[in-house]
Length: 204
Image (cartoon, rainbow, N blue to C red; front, side, top):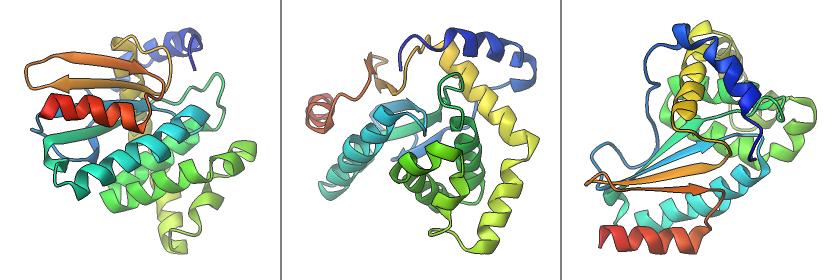
């Protein structure tokens, strides 16, 4: 969603003192030290982000895992809710960040559910309804409590400021960084096959 972040980032500057350090890196796949690092900035309520996550990133990870090449790449996920146009994205991001504190498996399940059920919860902001089928009632209660913790907002603010420092003006935005520091930036969804082919050339 290009050209909608100026007001949002102006507001983000006001919380820079409380945000402090960089946010923790959340790995959708792979781990630190891979020869190619893929950084993704995404919004749970963004329709293009949904397509990118479900139809490009997830199949790419599956393909690389099946080919025993997943250790060559890492995929780092960053939350960037575009509050000015997606009024429920901030809430979704807080729930996802809280889920990560419950374990990576929980975060993956929550992220999958939020993207798959995007059309439903985007209407009324009832993100919890999208999570009822993947979490036990007690887990959902715990998740909601954790999402309300101020420290979650601090991490989300750090993510927003990181995006600002990288001059990101749309979601999804992806950076592909090699061991030598070479960096390629993609705005939008490059598509599964083009992204896989590009990565294959880098890790050859």
